[in-house]
Image (tube, rainbow, N blue to C red; front, side):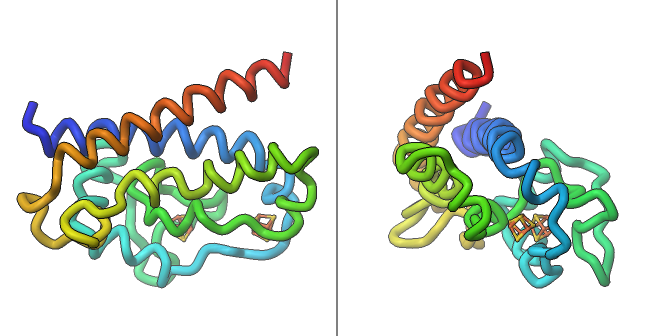
Length: 165
Ligand code: SF4
Ligand code: SF4
């Protein structure tokens, strides 16, 4: 497997598990909220970004793009992986204020930027999802950042399981 393929694989797997974790925390709020935070203009980055397109091809093939709604479906985002990182970054006041402790809030905020942080400085100062030439990525740096993100996520998932038991 090439370095780029390995990065796409690690990133996509990380995104899927991170999304599940965020869903676990946010679902009870978003599920009954009347606000639609999603906008087709945000969806668009996943079409424009060569890296996110690769993640989508690998992890969400066949997901249908709608010219008016982007990836949004009546049941929420139809894209299981390859979403723009910004889609995970937004945490509304309701969700933040409902966190049981400052530590829980801090962990949730760190989780929300996991992909953003993992893709930083992919080439120079550029972010992985903004790169037009994937041959230029700094594979060593990204591999290290993805490993750090994986370690954070694994610890957090253990904690969430403990809190549930
Ligand atoms: S993030 Fe907040 S405002 Fe947006 S759908 Fe969820 S609960 Fe509603
Ligand atoms: S979460 Fe999905 S539907 Fe919502 S803005 Fe992001 S890509 Fe679009």
